[in-house]
Amino acid sequence: MSTGTTKLDVEVADVVIVNDLVKRFHFRRRDGGLLPTFSGGAHVVVEMRDGETSRLNPYSLMSSPLDTSEYTISVRRDDSGRGGSLFMHNRVRPGDAMVISYPVNLFSLDLRARKHLLIAGGIGITPFMAQTAQLAGQAGNFELHYSVRTAALATYADLLRQRHGRRVHLYHDDRGELIALDRLLATQPLGTHLYICGPKGMIEWARGRAAQAGWPAEAVHFEHFAAPQPGLPFDVTLAVSGKRIRVGEQQSLLEAIEAAGVDPPYLCRGGVCGQCETNVISCDGRFLHNDHWLTEEEHGSGAKIMPCVSRFEGRSLVLER
Ligand code: FES
Image 1: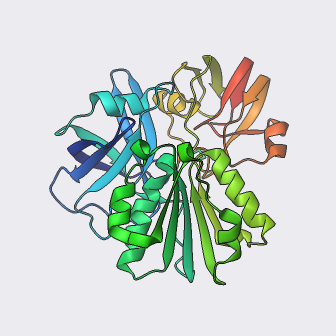
Image 2: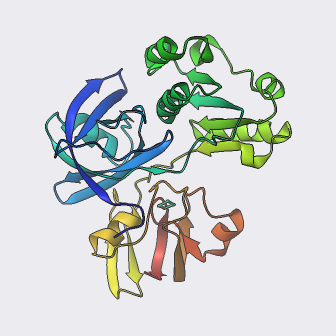
């Protein structure tokens, strides 16, 4: 069994259209029991069986950790992705049986912090839905700064304001409103932790400003799952299991290895946790590294690959799997 990926049989209890791009899915246990406890920032991996194709995508849990009668996730439609979000939007209906992983938290709150400064962009709001519910339930000190493209795409902004009032600050891109991050970073009480979830550019900007302002790295938390990208098909030899596999255009290398009956470890399936790290035995070609785990030097060396998000173009590739 893959690391941290114990499975849960669930039923889709409800599907709710949130706005033009986002739908919310409610899962309940099929045996009627409570779901496992989790903490704010956790994600589950949702298995999508689409005929011969299997996709396993991670989504942040956004329901309150104080209520495990159901889990909820929100899925933003990506028309140019590999089809996972389109499958969720177009094919999943209330009453469907699905399989999800146990929750795993790679973006947890540091409860030693005196205050939590939360910075969200777009669909990056979802882990903060659970974290703010957890903090509010524990009388935690937090403020949330949430940047959206337009008011129509301000997913859950009204709900957050209703729940948390003036702790929630909203910024609209189309009105030219920007988070005054430098001022925020300069005015927090000692012992504040910073959390960032949103587009890659936003995460890099906020981390960079925090480093510049002298925030210690251990007080800065961020989450950015890279969705596996489609690409040209390629062949791989798995040296340990003695298999030769083809990675399809819409398939990740990790999915192709699993489809061949090999069970590699994984947690995030988004290039951030390091679990799926795989040694390269030989290659004749170039890697398309999409992970946030390996260093630039490791990417350059060609000695390792993260098969959940990275691909290969070339004549031959042999991996230690
Ligand atoms: S499964 Fe987390 S980096 Fe690949």
